[in-house]
Length: 194
Image (spheres, rainbow, N blue to C red):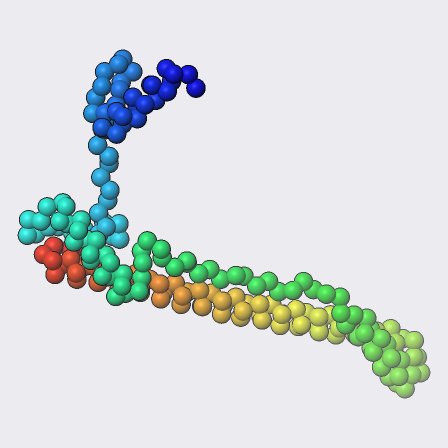
């Protein structure tokens, strides 16, 4: 770094420390005032009016005290609120080949062969008919099992959503208790609060 840059940097730092800013055409002007920070009451959704003539400095002090008091008494910190709960969705497991249709076909064919042989002396026709009926029955068992799995998944989802809703409702109540506490404190210090 050359000496000119070091001197310029030092001058700029000194001017900044004094609250001065140099314009592009070489004039020195006061630095703009920092933007006012929002009041603590406003940051939590409350509007506090100093009805006993308190100045801004006193209002900041009072709001800070009331913020701390409400935080301690409610157990809720608006600066670090608990996370919002969301329910994880449970999906029904994908349909797995169970062999129920094939098993039904085998059972149906065996039963049909016996019935066909006894009824009209035609075991082949009875076996074909029994196999067809067995396939249909096996498919029905597959669909019934699938519906049962979907119902279990739906119940698990409903339960998880209910738990998430309950958690979020508790957090909302804690937040409301905080706001009520801060409002009561500020009103006790002579502010009109909405």
